[in-house]
Length: 132
View 1 (cartoon, rainbow, N blue to C red):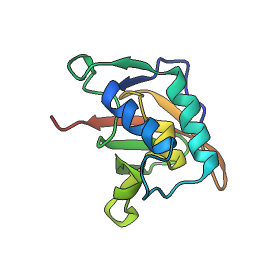
View 2 (cartoon, rainbow, N blue to C red):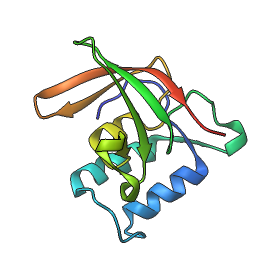
View 3 (cartoon, one colour):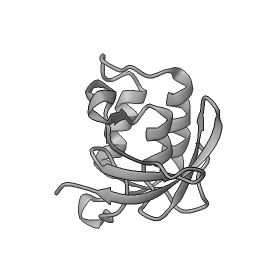
């Protein structure tokens, strides 16, 4: 879940929701402790901003994101959601999954790295769509 040295930016309301998931405030969470610890570490480094000050090209909860693997020509499209709304068939990925933790708070054009079963891979965020 390493990231480039760029500043992680989160909306305050997203931060509060994510912290409540991490603290067990929601019953329907399907994530493991390792991923939760990784997300918590990332949240501690985040710059928190109000809704009106949040950049439109930064990945947040409910963002639609297009990413490209550095070593392949594949482009993936996904939506970052809370664990209870995750559905791989619908391309809705949990914020608690390693890929969700790797993407949250970073913007279009940035590179992120995360651990997959075959090792670490680097992806570029091609596009971020945030609904108003």
